Image (cartoon, rainbow, N blue to C red; front, side, top):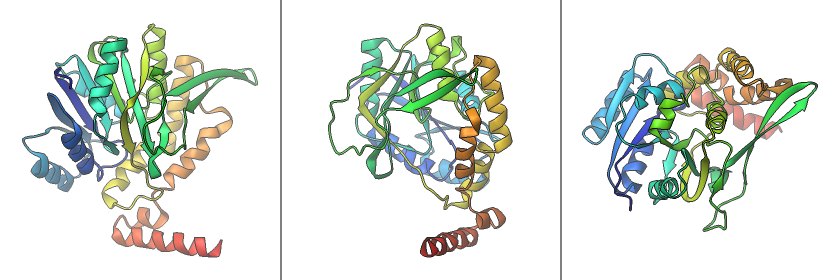
Length: 303
């Protein structure tokens, strides 16, 4: 067990409702000395009250009146961190036993600037076990492609996956050297998505190493339809098409790489925005959710 104090910062990605269980799992499965902070923007008053009543004294909260993207929240937190290492955990990520010790051990043994664990999703299938980013020419334009290693394989027990370098670390859960993150502006607040690739390119440019640590495991919660009205406004803000397209343009100008060649990511944007159904948008309430669930069931029966 590590004896080094660590700062763990939890931030909503596109859910508020999952943060309760996220924090519970961190408190349950984290050994050694640590401080646990929550940084959140645009949090509904009832949600703030629930969190403070539930976790007051064990968690330090910082709230902002308006929504903020992940990089904005990370940078605000970094300006207050005094420990050598910090871990950023999205609120829809649930950690498992030994998760932090393994990442700290990896950092101490490799000197890496950033560490990522195995990230699972539905049915304990691998979301990513390290990631690759390659650039190729397409119709005279440099285009970037991200590959999430071993995605879709179900994890049923120990594996032979080795600790190895990775081109970037998914934002869902990252351990970072605080001084490196601050000195090289690792988190660019102009991006609402693809922050992990931007961070990876930034660290690579500085000759710094990122590592995948297979002994650390976390779970990324994902639902095809959002079912809690508490999350609707944040989710729609996070994935707003105009903001996403502005981010594509910004990334292309910064790195001279197109990460949305031929509008490939636009199709994903349509799908992810569809996670808040038509009736839920019109009536952001349990009634709207029930109507969308009924519509989905009828569609399945018809097809």
